[in-house]
Amino acid sequence: MRDNIENLKNKKMNNFTHLHVHTEYSIGDAISQIPALIDKAIADGMEAMAITDQSNMFGVKHFFDYAKSVSQKTGKPFKPIIGCEVDMIPISRFEKKVKEKHPGFHLILLAKNKTGYHNLMKIVSLGYLEGFYYKPRINKEILEKYREGLIVTTACVAGEVPQLILNGKISEAEDTIIWFKERFADDFYIELQRHKTDKPNTAIYIFQQQEVVNPIMVELAQKHGVKCIATNDVFFVNENEACPHPAEKIAKIKDDFIKGATDKGYDAKICCKIWKEWEEFGCYLFNKSHAVCYTWIAYQTAYLKANFPSEYMEACEKWRS
Image (cartoon, rainbow, N blue to C red; front, side, top):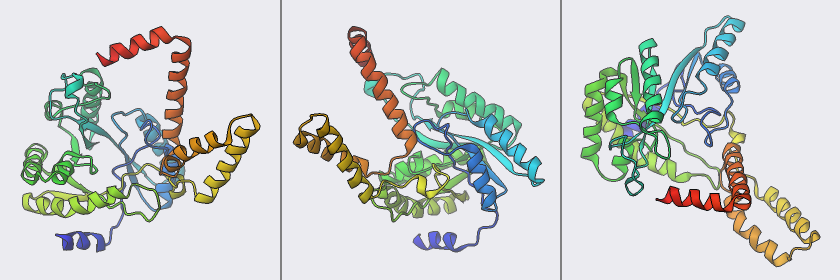
């Protein structure tokens, strides 16, 4: 099985197209601005690109308009492929009980024509209107109803097929592949990713999971006549946008933090203790959009709790119930 992976890796790929791309509209996940993504793709010799933001199509018009303007300016067509990464749940989308919350599996949907685009809009909208529970969700009932004109891929290791494989449920993974193959025929693809990294403090476990999943996915794809595609789960335009702070930079920030706090009268031992609790987390690979979102949420929450304590606690209790 591993030989199959190596054979795919060694084949020359002409006109590679990114089909799994998150833009800044994947709120809290990605930092990539659409013009920068397209400019980078063109600079790398690509003629097309998809966007697959998490559970939304907010960036579609911006994406389409910029791709069109670039094509007109350069005289070379650049094809925008419209898609979305949805959360697929194995239960009814109307189930909304806290104790039965299911995180959902990722699934990539790409529109191959106008009908597919319309159906993609319907699916994504219903995820909000009918399936929303902590986040937009769809299920196979919706997907089967609006499947015309859509291309489906198994997504990243958070997809249903990879997750079943990782949990040792190979026969269930095979049944899932058969379900998609029967409904989407040649518009269903097995998605393979290899995110190897040598950067410290990054999510190395993702690559380890991919190493487990990929050979079995290739084997099942061959068994059932399903084509494979190679993708990268894109969250950044350039590598340096994803890098954690180097150790020497963190050390300098620590010195500035301790000095600034002690100058204001805070105990140095307490400041060092606080920094120690931060430091390990601060070294982790964490993009700017995550930091901005969580900071803003923390600020808003603290403001409400401080200024409207009764209303805040009442809202928390209602949410728990």
